[in-house]
Length: 422
Image (cartoon, rainbow, N blue to C red; front, side):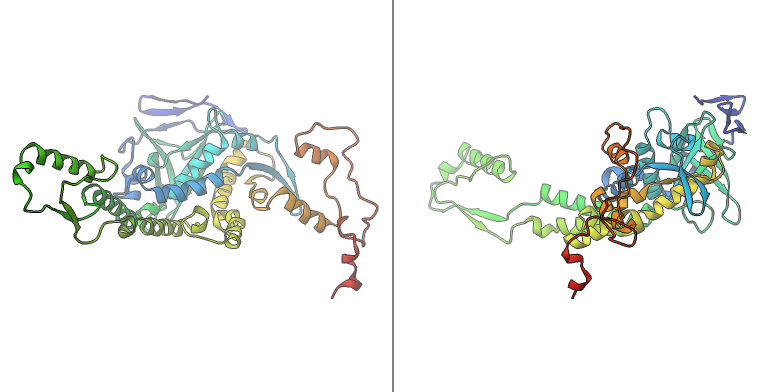
């Protein structure tokens, strides 16, 4: 297990090699502003991602929706034998490490956190430690140095003792765009005005419901009533009971004294007057647009069955596809080759399985596309977690399916005859 240790101004991370490649394990400490570097604070400005995550339901709803869907897609490793041939490498050290990053950390948890890092902070990083485990670097602790061409030249981790240079470790690194360096700028900075407006709106509505009267009016009492009966304890008891009713601590209908009347003045305050629902929906839509998520998918805007179905079919394509691409390219750049030195090895997130619909839909499409059965009985048994039985590994082709004949064994019937087409 790799450990961090300091001695005489040096920081050591483990002491071994990965996939036969010697790794540098000792660096000098460059003292900055531990444990959170100033550069990290400059990316978010006055916006605190932790506070936004805790207090802004619109941001958390949208980001968590994207992160959960990205994290649910598993990694798979392949060997590219040729342009038309790739072989699955499920026992590759790369796939093993990506599926089990480190003790007490699952693939889902790692990818969930990386997606949140990328969407909230516009920067994320994973380093491969000498023991073969993957360690996420929180954006708050990530220190990036770049040259005049905005190329990242050094990568560091801000620890309690200073900044540790991890440039020579195999890294999967992602950062967005900035006009002045190779680092990114948090989308929360762009959304800060909308989020601030939403915060003030919530505070105003809360104060309105807490301090403003829910109804306005006056109580009238006939002057001919004996004023002596209204003085002292009788008046105090009535005022106390009316205050309880007004503050909402008492249920039922208030009982007025003889001859007293309640005369409404002005209009009452209702939820429709505060535009609470409209305000929240508008913020949800704005946040969805900022993160390129269709509002219909998170319930921010009403949709029909057809367009929601279309948006869901695009979820793992143009919607979340860029997130998958940046993760795949970053991991395949340094981490995967360091884990497995096999020629042509690469890893990808199996988004095809997630976007191709249900198994029944895939079966119908593939059977029609190949012109017959495409799965053996042993493969079908494995899919439903049944044990293998000898003699089931051969592909069965029904006698009514031949080359150049029917495209599928389900295509029989007079409705498929060409002479019956109109």
